[in-house]
Length: 511
Image 1 (cartoon, helix red, strand yellow):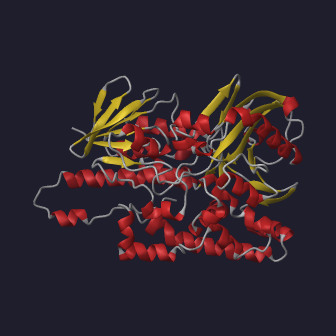
Image 2 (cartoon, rainbow, N blue to C red):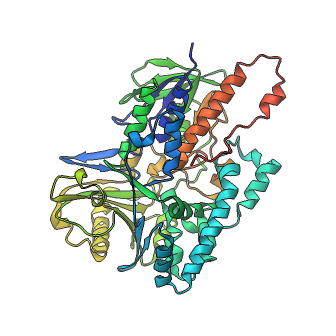
């Protein structure tokens, strides 16, 4: 009889795990409370318009290609990826901007135009980021930790020290650029990990390096195409995906996960359980005795305005409009915990690349503004109208004039929406903050620290958030499950110490 796994949640981590296990002959059943797969990589529909409401761009597509290859398939047969050029535009204050591109000579010229001598600084920055990525990817990111005590292992400690633990993204970027504009352009990306640049470990400068080296991509038909394709791949391999089927409890017996109870009362037994639900929600709501959650630091959230407008819009597919007072913007979000007076705004115009996403004569806009979480106490209903006015005024300043008069469909998602829709702790759209003491061995572990046979995957679990990282985590979870299950079934004559000392992770890159 095939070994069995139940996966709670059909987010990317759960789906990637399902593909890996099903490809190895496991019986896999996935349960999700929502009506479509993908977790936060989902959609919102209003009338004739459909928007992605999660990730809007793809990095490191090689990670997805490797997942499909592990199943004996080709990603390109299921998803058409278009390379973005420019990757995106960063706008500073008014309309002064930097276009980021993978064309190195053009990129150096773009940087030089903003800061004389900055072109050389950009090259040294890429070199430093590449070295740091090489020091962290195998030894830290793709390593399966067992918890904070792993820091005492010499090899782990050596890897962490080589990753410059005292440096932050902001301090590392400042080593290569003099101007605030360029320092912000190569550090603001941490906002989409839920943290501020001066509180995020320096190793995360790998993000702009990966963009430069491997590009930024967009799947035709919308980013949700990836989730649909991944779910389809899992089903072709024999996995069962049950949507609109909430799980009310993860069953544990004698210190081991034994299955789940569905909201309708049915118990589903399994050899292992994978929790792809938000880690905090899993501990508080799905386990009778979960790990302690209260002292964790949750990342920022956001307000997402989804708009359909009449007529043609101008500009690139992706734009980041940075606040004129960027530090004040960060302080509003993370210290004062209020809706920012001077917001930073991410704008995606998917119809710039794929006009088929909207009816003729209309375009789609995705407008995401980083904000505090529900812990802030913001009265979202009361404060949202005035906040919308501030956001639209900044959009007009950046060239999106008279949006309000052209809107034909609109909806807004707040941290309250994210919390309800995805069971996210405090409505944090990005999960646990990527701070030093919540990264690597300090982050919640793939293997449950309390129950055998229970595994975690998702943005709040090691190695962290983002499409390629969570997809990689699916591989790491599947490897840990197969290893642990084989070990459990080994003859008792094998020395227990030899099993306990094993750590399994792939040292080969996924891309």
